[in-house]
Length: 113
Length: 110
Image 1 (cartoon, rainbow over the protein chains, first blue to last red):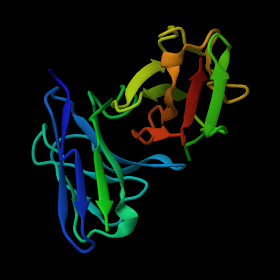
Image 2 (image 1 turned 120 degrees about the vertical axis):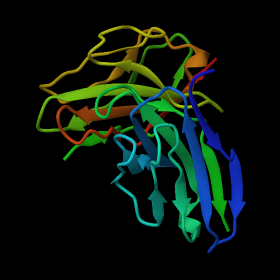
Image 3 (image 1 turned 90 degrees about the vertical axis):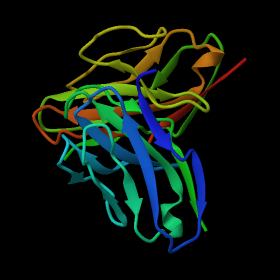
Image 4 (image 1 turned 135 degrees about the horizontal axis):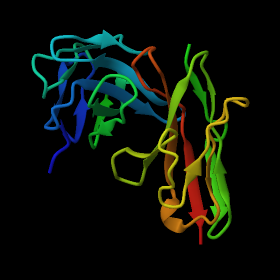
């Protein structure tokens, strides 16, 4: 089934550890995004990529990095996790940057202790 | 700057009652607006977009540029409508990034 796959589904991580959240899409979408979802704060954009080889910062990029080596993969890395990064992380893609609808993954629930 | 405001964090109605989830936006240009829905334990998915002017699952939303609103409405709520609803805005020719509101959790009681 075409769509977005995120891994892991959930993770408990000790503060200070490095963690990479994986995201893969098979729809050949150009644009990909990482959002975090927090109660009362909604969805906030962390980083995005309009096309393979390019990335940009969203609303809350600090503490996170991304890469877009190819069209399908858009991993999100936490270099040194902190408790405030406890959240549910959603990867999304759209056919083109801008106003085309987003397709979301199932999310990764991350707890930093 | 783009901003989306959903004034209600929680909304509770009874089955069969009308429901309206409010969304106001701030954007100087011509916006494109969306409603996304997240049912329990499921991924976020697009519910509808204003340019389509369609009704999905009985929901409609009309863009009111004068009031800068894009409220989501359904005349008769069903229990299966219980979910988290997010209004989102994309500025045409602008930031190329979707900005979401903080969401409204709708509960439809039997």
